[in-house]
Length: 227
Image (cartoon, rainbow, N blue to C red; front, side, top):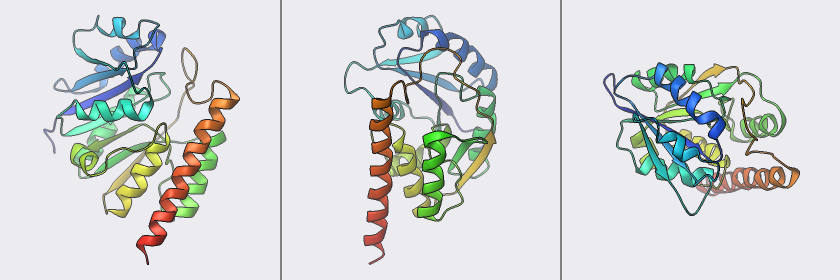
């Protein structure tokens, strides 16, 4: 896949402070033939308007059925590139890691994860639990920063509402025999704006429930497949 095409999907909601500098940074690190697709959930802060000022970036504005996983699904459906990558808009996913993700897929991997060197909080708990329960060597099931062959994403459509989609994708991909590689990186803090993961305790609990429900559902499915 040496000459394969690439699309980088960036789901956004109220990221006006981050989007312009992030797009500039991404453009430094991806090949000239690549596409950047911003999928915006109709942000009231003008994120989409700022994206339109960059003529080299594609924009998809969604006015209904908001959410991270829905944004990614729509972004994947909107591109025909051989390789699809996605990342957060808050600079916690460094753009300089993108060439390594792309190279990994070009050299034979089906999915390449950017895995955080230092996990903490809910992510640390979920990753340790997933490694134990699923018996794999994957160290960051909740990274949300990856590149994959589009063919893989066609065979394993994303499920879930928030970041739990990543656990679901990786467990199903591994069970189907797809080759998954990891690229470690140090995750910097969000540069501007408010975290969408845990802005308050109720959101944290709601997202945490989605993760746990996904793990239990996958374990249940695996159990009955072995019968």
